[in-house]
Image 1 (tube, rainbow, N blue to C red):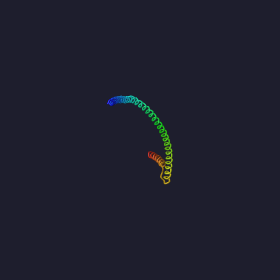
Image 2 (cartoon, rainbow, N blue to C red; image 1 turned 180 degrees about the horizontal axis):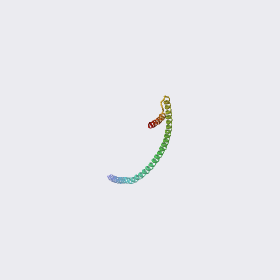
Image 3 (cartoon, one colour; image 1 turned 90 degrees about the vertical axis):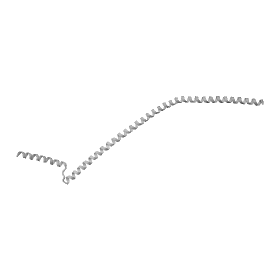
Image 4 (cartoon, rainbow, N blue to C red; image 1 turned 120 degrees about the vertical axis):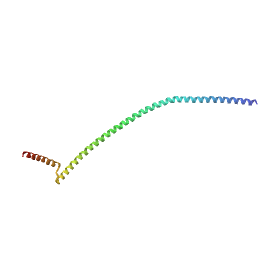
Length: 146
């Protein structure tokens, strides 16, 4: 029986040593986790600040790029707009010239047609009106002298 008692003592001592080792390792794991959490929290805040700075830099570059592209697009729009305006004005001038020619040709033909059928023109009426005024003036002079 003495062998059995010794064996039990060794088992109990081994179990106590193993249990103590497990507790020590568990505590170390726990402390490592807390340390990692604390370090991540501290470094995470600094890392976050670095990310914010990087983001601000990228945003600034992006705004600059967008503004450059907008200015380039506006420049092209202004160029095309002035070209189109110039072309429209040129076409408008040509159309006005052609309309004037058409109007003069129409007036000439209408006046010619009215003369052929015996209707006096505006100039003819003006000449007759002037002659009538002269005659009226002469008649008034004659009437005064009598």
